[in-house]
Image 1 (cartoon, rainbow, N blue to C red):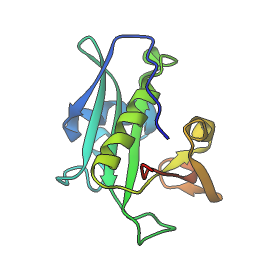
Image 2 (cartoon, rainbow, N blue to C red):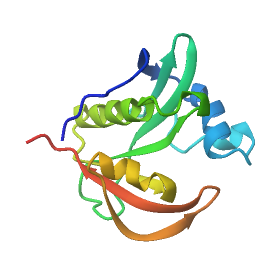
Image 3 (cartoon, one colour):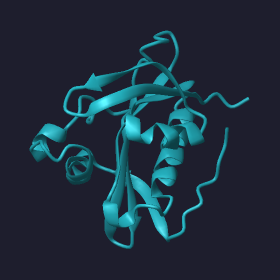
Image 4 (cartoon, rainbow, N blue to C red):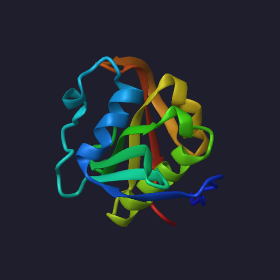
Length: 157
């Protein structure tokens, strides 16, 4: 599956450092935590890619992509999306789509075959729109809430 982002604003997606993701991760995904508690295992791994969405000089969205075994298919080359967040003032402008598609492309370029995440229940429809399928039951993820495992085959035919 290949989609081209349809941004309605002049957004630039670029690589950022892991510490640049923390404020949006905290503000949008985990406001109940201290900023340093929003660091994730693997943030500093050399294969991890952190993406920032900018409108002008403003960082309005973030996403991180990690090399990570797929829980249901440990034998495949899995890549995991974590910490994707778009600031409230920048929503409904296809920025999440741009971040997601850029993250998928990065994983594909690294030889990944399955791209996966734990989607918050409220975001399942977003991922389904891009071809992700869910499996298993919804469960409570610590410090996040109810989530569902979602995955996408990213092997280019």
